[in-house]
Image 1: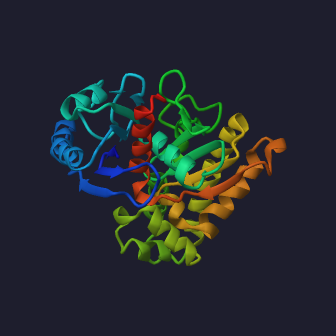
Image 2: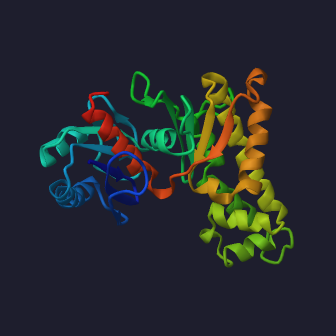
Length: 319
């Protein structure tokens, strides 16, 4: 058995599995309270993970971390959501606590590995995975192994600049096409249109009269009811995202692009159909028709599945 741990900004998941996919043998999920630091998360991991190691014959441990990491040394570079992780030797610390070999990867890379081997990319050699939710990430998986580049950071399509004229690193695909970007654009629209404006009445109803309640889901609901402003906001975000995926496809020529994350749950008509259209519009023409775009298959447990696979590869000496 292998232990998989997902460390995020808002949740902590710890699971045991054999690497063959769903269902997991055992899973525990904890919410990370607002204001919690890295020390709180580490103190929550140890007792739970220790119990799993004692209960099951755990050979190795994999961690999917929500932020950039050095997969060779197993050190965390930083977390963009939780303080206290800067340059932390996560693999060494966890190995010392649990007396098992530990592999550490970025959470998007773990998700990509899981989708490539067990989910939407199964039976394909060249897989590009990308998730769009509160942020936008990516992973490249070739012959069942994650390509991390020379610095452990690769496939970050959310941080592509939208065009060559943009020199500010704070302006990127993620700021234009993520779930937060969609919600922010909708709030900006409502700031210019009152609650009785028929052009945005569906958006006002979707947020219950409070724009701060808006998420990409509410914007999608308004768009599905025919709100032209909500439809325009979604269309613009999906166009930017499609452009970014097309750049990745042009560079990597994958067989399949697997798309996950909360925004992708908007569905086929409002999300995947326009996304495929825009990817085809922007991709290098000879590559059109050479790949498919598929929804992710493993849901909220995708990162822990990937962490378990990472642990399995560690135990087999493949990393």
